[in-house]
Image (cartoon, rainbow, N blue to C red; front, side, top):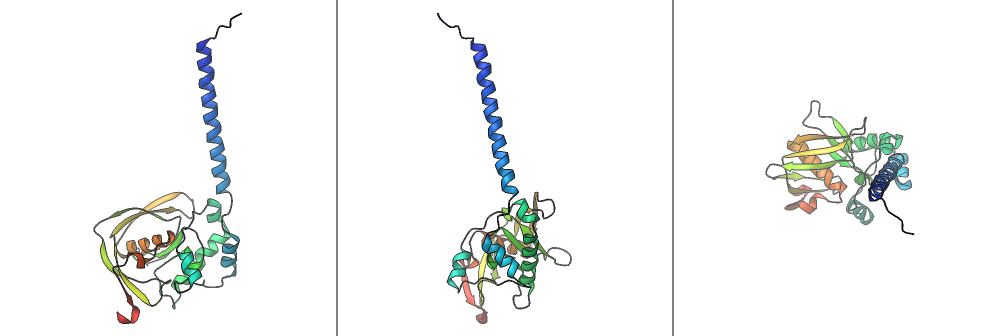
Length: 221
């Protein structure tokens, strides 16, 4: 006996199967992302550093081999849970306090500089009223514009030296809003744009000396 196959019915079954597989894949992917967003990604060592720091944090410097190796690493993104946690709030306060300390005289600082491999920076906004220091989690530079301009740069992690580095006069940055956790963007110009470029480099393991046309001992300037 021969079976007669209904090709139209078979086509419908195949189409429904394809849709079902797609829905399952989307659901699984979504749950994985949701699971990622719900967990803290700070390591035990990072938790210890943040929790044990008092008013300011120790800044890693390139003259210490272990510090130098850490500064060359790539920082990871923060999850929503990371940004909503007391650890992140404390880290933000400590980074701002460390940068503002009179012995530092910094205008920006990145988390890797204090031993935290996360994409977060603190930047003094000279382009805003009151020149506030603001924290930017998950910072990335989206675009650059204008002709690069040479300028003098220093770094808290390379004490005693300055270099001449070419930076773009205008950048578009993206980051996670600290209240909504949504990705937002901002266009920044002038010296503040230079700070953002310097700090964004830290998140990718790049130091200003890698880009400098020349480097000087501080007392020689």
